[in-house]
Length: 372
Image (tube, rainbow, N blue to C red; front, side):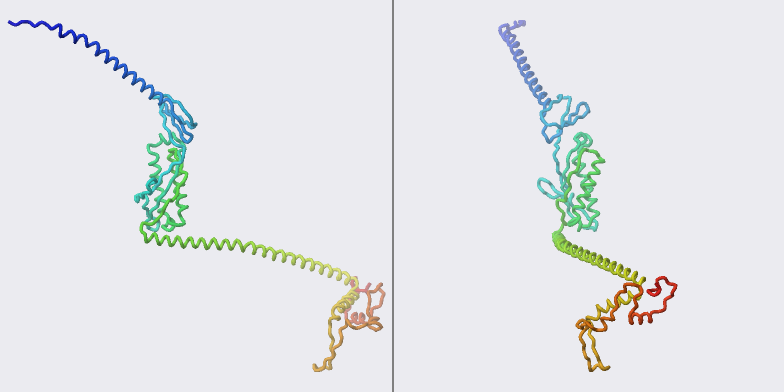
């Protein structure tokens, strides 16, 4: 009843002929894709094998956990997929506390602080640092920049908290920033993360309100005026002190010269006295007479003689002795001279002085001319 349908050979024949063509086209497509992927792989491998290092950069090469630092600039090679390379700059880097470096926007949560005298201030800090050990910078900590900024904020608050608001706003800025830099650097050395602080500066310090700001500005202006006055006084002192020193040196030198002159004169007088004393020991009476006459020669020429009758009503002045001529007078004949020998008789005045002299003991070997 049913007839078996014969296969349509004419219709199925073309389908058996097209299958090899599709297979060949797929193989060609796979070959092209494989070649493209291979080319991409080779390009990526080649790019990973070569890198360029600038003069201001470090390169850290890590091979199976071992690290190596490359500092020389130029074209460098590394093993792809086995060696990991990371670059870092040698130049100084910056970060800020209290404001944004790019937009200069203030961050009150970072800059708002309290001082020792319980006043509020906004302090902005600017820091510079360098990476001195790139291996420790990459592998000793996860986020070294966050660590250094958090430490800086902590030390800034600690340092500002032990200073008064006046110091923070005026004269204490240098001390504060120096202390913060020192403390931060000491802590980074302990942490050993390969970073060195090179600069720490207070960028700005002000009080929150405008009224207080103006008051502190007036105080700062007054202090600057005081410093100006001190500098002017020091300049005037530097001008006057050399002159005063020169005058003092001149006075000292004059006093020294006068001292030496007085000492020389005193030594001369002492030598003269000693010479007279030695002569007096030898010839006491003759030496007395000679000294008396020498004194009279100095005193009498400047004397004025007045003759009076006992009252002050009549005074008869005479010429001084310097105008008198003694030629032919008995006074000139009676003037004694130094004896040439011990046997020369003394004058009446000498005899009178001898009579007035106390009797000398004949046992004294230096008793006088008579004993000799």
